[in-house]
Length: 351
Image 1 (tube, rainbow, N blue to C red):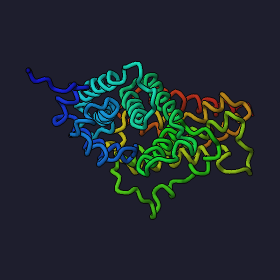
Image 2: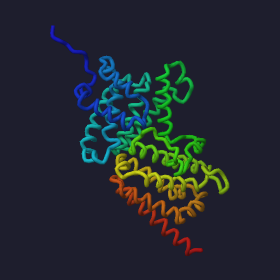
Image 3: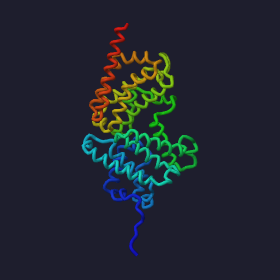
Image 4: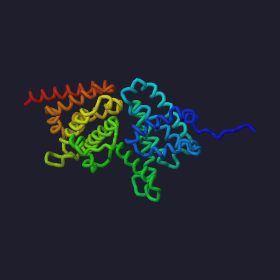
């Protein structure tokens, strides 16, 4: 009888296991894992050559998603020239991961591996500039997290310790990325430049590229949660809690500038347009919230017309302009700064 090999669920995975998959997994665990620490190096690598795992569509899709993200994020300055080729490889791996998940019964039994793969594809698509598609994948990951009951004790009870840790870490990652729904975490996101770069700061051996992502994302989350609080009418007059005052957003901007001043351009550019967009959001909050929340307009105008805020805007504008992905955002920031200057002059003339 002729030799009939077992079904190969992913020819791409098999053919590139040694030449692409394994090298990219090393990059993933060196660069990405500290930011998305769900499945450990030992867990993944111990299963790569296991025949049963190689036939597991969910596991293979997870590995392909890890490699897809690590191909485009984060990149060092010496890797930027190869970004177009890396983007092509990334899309091919995402295509293959989605093909493995295209059967009618996919998702009927939610798994942490599948939810994590969706989250990683969200990151890869966002880095490639497909924001709408990325949001769909994020919602998919969050939906699977809800099906896994990650937000309740039921989702963490009666399972072995390592799986419980993976679920808890995935829940934390999804919760943070979803921009936090409760204002109660405002204090947890508080801080200042001295807190960030104080003597006791410990980043556990993270690289400068990883620090850039974590620290700027932290400030962006502070910005987003304050914006959420403002939309719900929770921002207080002077004398209230700092986290619920307009001065809080000045502290966020100042801390962001302090962080960027400590980072090299290469570390910031490794993160692409997502990094620039966070700086842009932080710079634009006074203008955007002032338009959306008339009750805060007086306090926000006072901040916008202050010399300190203009200095912070100029610094953020410089960081955005210098970034390889900052061209479109820089123009919008320039226009916003001009509008602030004009409104300040008109206000002075009306007094």
